[in-house]
Length: 375
Image 1: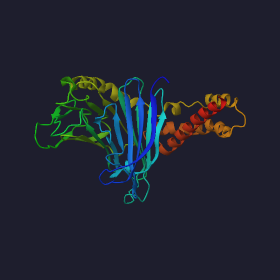
Image 2: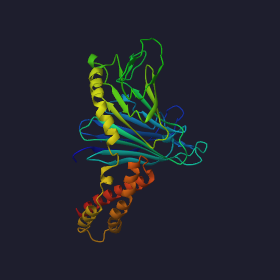
Image 3: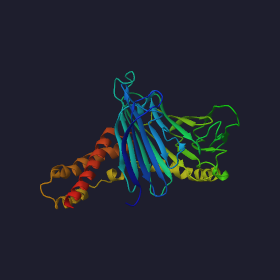
Image 4: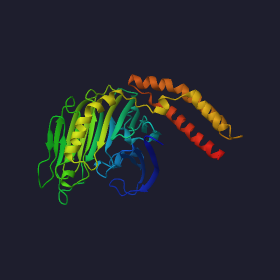
């Protein structure tokens, strides 16, 4: 298929010895978006052995590719609302939604009442999106709260360029913004630096390492992130000898926030900085204007799909799923206008969109099965 190829590697269960989870059952699922230029692999990991819910080990969502470092493979991304980590709930949906014109992967939760002291939030969705021959991983976080949201944060974690160590592989972490460079000082003991950034003027960051720079033949290359300044009210970077973490405080009245991520495998710090700085204006414009709805849903053509269904079914007789397959185009078409209208309003209707996505995936699956029956 031309365009973005999305590969779901499926669920894998294993027992862990991770501190606090010894002997527990862990669920891991990797999903890769291949743009033709870069392959980003998302990794969902949770411990399923706790009474209070599904508990992330180091973070529910990692990014183990395209490099083994940079955005942390075991947990680079967390969403918090009113002090609740959305990744601590059993998801309603995890998986690919679309590919081709746009690669789309969704993670959807409904924060159930009674959990975590009854702090009921509502619905939350994290959607990752990739475009053909593009080097960016785009992201949209959507909330559909049932109560007022007073605190909305996104927390990010990275190992820029290399998995450093004070004793074996000492590095010097560096954060570059449009205004300044913040460099970790040389030291023989752990140093923790906290830097408050101005989201209006420092809305993109390059995370790199002074020692492990491809210009010196070391490391894997740096990583970067960009957010929209009108959506973020505060940013704090915490720099240690190992991790660089970012806390983005989102304006709590928003239903949607968008970001862009980069990894720059093989690039020097200076080359990656030039690419990030040069691409920031167009990326900001893209985040503001692009529809993040899956194209196969937003552009769903009921009549064309009904014709396709009839063409496939004409080669079958007394197939068990014939009636269901014939009904699906109409069921999807009834939901699409509501989904599109809600998305344009800035407050996506997450449960309705999830229902439409599931029906669309079911339609595609039945069409594949019907074609196999013919063969």
